[in-house]
Length: 148
Image (tube, rainbow, N blue to C red; front, side):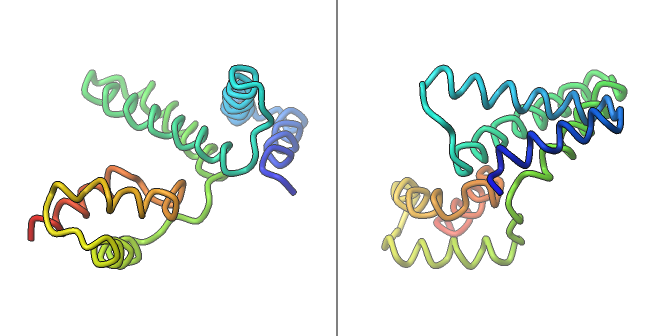
């Protein structure tokens, strides 16, 4: 079953169960997918949908930090609930150990020696880690490896 069909089925089940919070989050996701399809005049595959979800998760993380800084815990909790729904559609996340192993291998494969080679390393890792790891964390790991 494709990811898009799974999301649509989950939306229908949320409607039947009258789960308004889950339904709202799924509708936001469906709208983002539809917007991307209309803008680019293409049918999104699972990999492209994961990119859309990843972008939405990043927006939620940013919102949560801003809401918590403004002491608006009610809004932060709403964003966290939406994040939980969106995370259900993401592939299995890699552990920090797995990320470190992939970073070390990419540094060796790209023959990176300094911070100027960070782009080469990121270029190798981005396709492997898309949707499976927070790229900000990966970037920090690469910096630590290249400066060590």
